[in-house]
Length: 62
Image 1 (tube, helix red, strand yellow):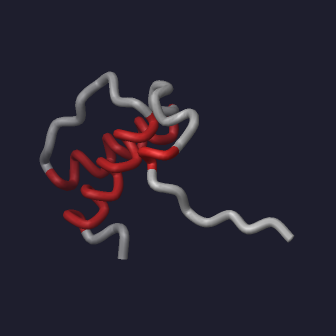
Image 2 (image 1 turned 60 degrees about the horizontal axis):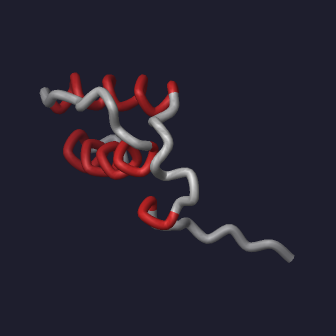
């Protein structure tokens, strides 16, 4: 039986790789709603954390 608990982005083995296209697209959507700037060269882990923050700010994560 394989469990897949959600890992903290800090623990991702690929967390330091550049953010993915879907992450970039979703971040820009959230950033427009939250009226914030998105740094261009985020890692996957940092993008994930920023997505979580902006989801809370915009109410999309509920």
